[in-house]
Image (cartoon, rainbow, N blue to C red; front, side):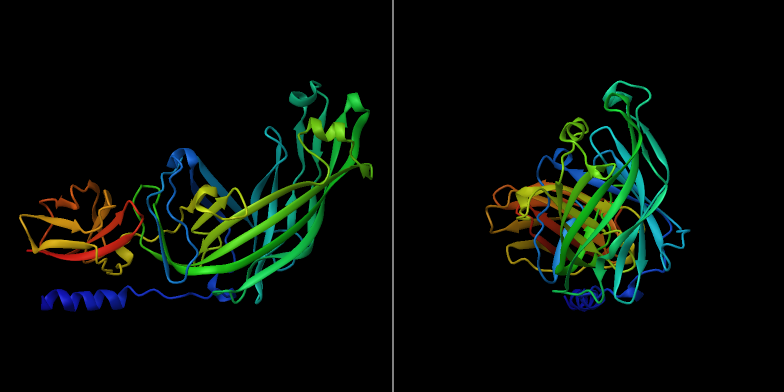
Length: 397
């Protein structure tokens, strides 16, 4: 028992987690390259998402996400325009006009001592045929090459960011395009979209989170801040300086003064501007049953070998015998609501050597280890069907 106690003390000291603070120095000077994310939606999760609760010193285990088959990419390039001095990079984004029409824009980003911020957009010339919409092969929507400067920078993260830091703002911008629709006597007619943007963000939690990497393995836990974002966009459309007619907008699936809203919780770690995980909600309540999807960052993820795990004790669970016998042991619980368990077996180096699930029978289940596991101290990390997590040590002779 003395050997186990000493090791537990050592593990607890190494695996401590604390609240992080994000400053300009928390990030690189630029992030040119391509990041990728994977998404778990209601279909891939069968509507059963991990519990997301805003809290301090939280532990969010997102390694149970089932990703769908789509990879999402975030290409970032250098900025070559005197319009945006001090820009760090531009992230390529897609503006979805309707279900069948979209264009690409590059959101220009910068880091200052006060914030990570968005300055505006760079748009290359893009000609989009409208034959599928109007039936005429000569009709087109052309976005002009342009630098779009926001009326004021959008603060994505205010520095220093820590628990209870909040920031909000408004800005507007204009996107120019030309429209050709023969049936409406429009021939390369100058048009523009006026966008008004309102946002309100706050750090509402901190702790540690882990996700599942592209190979389906849980990562080590990472220190994060939990940022809640509420954003509203209002778009209005003009032709030749006058409001676009409702009949034209309806044909495009648009409306004058069209409003769209985004509600997200994002987990942000030091050194990365792409959130390690983002939770999108369908409504303003940020309720569990309002989760639309969860997206996880797939780049530069820590493996389980880079970090040891906190040892926690749930009084409902017991493990015996300890040391174990014949490479097996029994778990028992007094909580009769627990019917299913997911578990990881972790060695002293923090490596996951086995992942499994088990069904309890009258509050008891026997776990078998692989015969190839060498002697030593191990940990079993449990997640029950109530989404409670606990980690227990055991000695394998």
